[in-house]
Image (tube, rainbow, N blue to C red):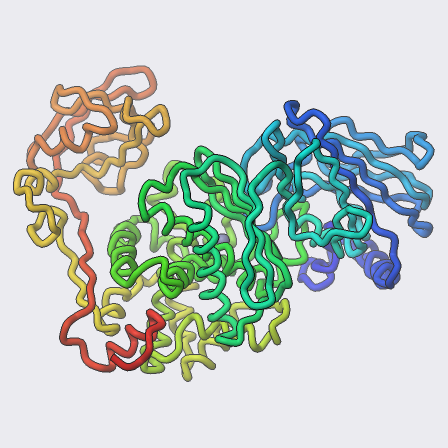
Length: 631
Ligand SMILES: [Zn+2]
């Protein structure tokens, strides 16, 4: 309801017709130049209390005797209702002379203020103690906010300019994509831009690089064992490889300035994309080998690709947003899954990952997906629609009955890439599909529906790919990726992990790797192996047949004590076909089950360029990797 422009376009617009009309009319009047902004001041006088003090000044709105203030319930890019208003305290609403105004709380996040059309001032405190990309955090070492967790909106006035003044402790500096005004505050053209421009404030390191005429800034907070020069050079490589997809060698970005806010934390939680910036929470002390840098590059590539896919090319529901409730989209396979896939292509083309690494990535991740029981239960568009209640609120059985649209969308993206290349002798694929959409949008923000993606596939591939979309977006057909890899000139072999081909030269270990029961074990406390709990039981597995279920604590196998680290090893003591007694606690009661040990259905994927691949296949493979067509 805050983003009323969206409602005007959406099918649900009839919900509150009079409000819509008034708002639309008022919009037209406030769009004129010289409109007074809504002003915020964010202070952090006592960081150790983890509270931002916000003062908000709403200008006179002469035709509105009542004004509604609304607090967001979610952060775009993260599809879960978080009810940020639960962290708001001390709300005071007064006129400019400090006299309290009558107000009525209409629901958990909405207040109606009797302002009589005059300017008024809102003050409140926000408890900020959740260190994630989606929320706000403040302590003695730094402050960070993602605007949806900090700022009230004024209903119907979201397209006004919004100004923020930051009152930071001595010695702290500010990093944000928002432009700085002459008065020293930060200016957003609208509420949407305000909350789409996170702010980092503290003593973080500030690094910078340029690509063409575009300035990139890096705000690096926290403790890391990474070489920060290497991080910056990876960001530059990723930025260049991504730009090459959207604008070829001409370069060019849809922003003049872009900010990477990076939090190096004990445990990183991923990234959140914004219009001209990104926040990435990484595990600071995880750069002990090359893999740490590849992980960083992969995250950066995913988030930076979002600057186009989802921030500028997006489902109509995904901007401007209704911040007060779920915004349902069926397009997250495209916005997230395809982004996740192309991040890997980008880091390959950027030179962070080499070709061998690319094959290794597929070989390691595909078997996990291909044996996941829940992957064929629900069509991808539906998985996207129910993100709010399934992926973001996974129940114990999620693994068995569902799959993430990131994971499945990634493989569908790869399959579409390869199908497109099959149709074009390797010349065009998924990157060219995105280029086509971006060119059609004339390099500006534009709506993308599934019909547009299908049209792009048709234009890029020279034929209809509708059956592909029916099978893999709306249907649950298994993906023909192994066949597509062969057609791209790869040799594809799936072998049991205990076979000699799988690469383990130890015959004893190989023999023991056959034993399997279908129980997935996790250690508790989290991250330790101290105690072994059943995290999942695969459908129809020996463990399920024996009656084990989520949360059972396994204490012994065949009378031998086990923990999370030794469970698989002790299971290996029992050959496939034999029965073993499993001792476990269900809640606080010691019980026993008789598990008939099975043979592991797991497979290892061996993937490498086939030496004798036909020229046509080699062309597909080279196009896929972004290599020149000639051998
Ligand atoms: Zn994403």
